[in-house]
Image 1 (spheres, one colour):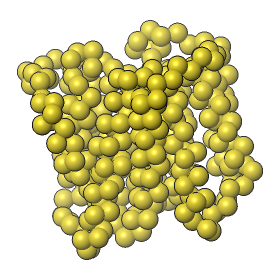
Image 2 (cartoon, one colour; image 1 turned 30 degrees about the horizontal axis):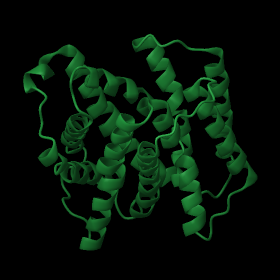
Image 3 (spheres, rainbow, N blue to C red; image 1 turned 90 degrees about the vertical axis):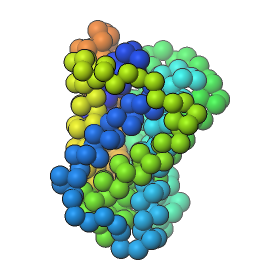
Image 4 (tube, one colour; image 1 turned 45 degrees about the vertical axis):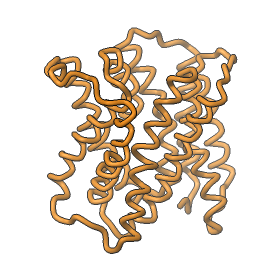
Length: 279
């Protein structure tokens, strides 16, 4: 639900002149500093193969995920991106079916996922059934969604050998490292003195400390406890807080159709998570 609000915080920062890459670096840098207070001792994984898995986690859950999502926003409609990125739980389920023979999708999971996804569509498009297509932008948004699905399944496996704090610190570190080459093409331009402005540092701190440090740490821990599929299904709730935060901070109206879509999301998530033995 907190991640659903970050669209508003990010929009405020972009309106004040920050680029998506700059926002990502600031939020992950703040999160990386915070995580050291929780996981200060261990530096490396048990072996180099596990370290490479951490690099992949940093890419799929960090740099590539955010780059493709933000590039998609520039090329296509925000509604398109929001809806396509919200398909991450469905893609996670499809990947699990393809990769894990022991996993079977029951009718509750399928019906709940479809109902929640329909609710997301109603909330995002607000009853307007016109989808403006931009092949490259929509493909980038789909890439972002696939990245998050892969990230959720990967972290499920590595969480068996490493605790949530260590995993999260690695994600922040390799996310930052793999993002840095982008600044060769587009150097940092945002004046550092602007971080003294309340509207900048308050939103940056929220994104870095709450939405990244706390939420990524909780995500890693919850996947270990509940499994990748059940946890990922809760991302269907993101649009609920997005529309509430937009109404409060951006004066965007709440409509009846948005309430209907929100109810569908809640019922869909509850139904999908009733299935037992999810990975």
